[in-house]
Image 1: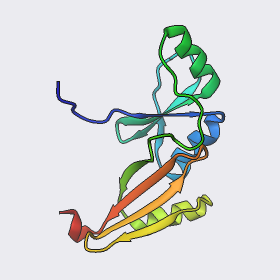
Image 2 (image 1 turned 90 degrees about the horizontal axis):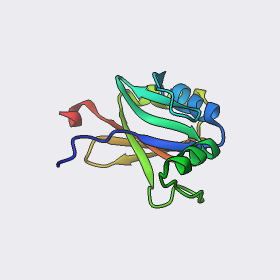
Image 3 (image 1 turned 60 degrees about the vertical axis):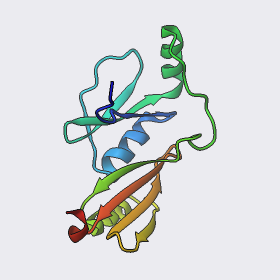
Length: 139
């Protein structure tokens, strides 16, 4: 049973609207179809893939407990998961968008790889890495 791809990440939050706005406005994802799941939330898409799911902590926990599904405990940071990483193009445009949204980020250049990494946090403290590769290094 080989795995074929990563499906999605679920971000639990006390403010689903602010979290939705971060992923859509700061990172350019699109809010898309989400079936009725018994608790409030959003699915954020990159292209046709709903890669970030957002749910409100308390309602998700109550729903999951009723279904017998274990729920992550609230903890500072993201526990053993350090960050989510995305690929992007046009580094200057990405940085301009983050600045326009007043999102603080740290830039890291990877020598010899033609790679620029931008590190930032979502409203819940989840660390996000955005990788932008120079055109000549992408091939």
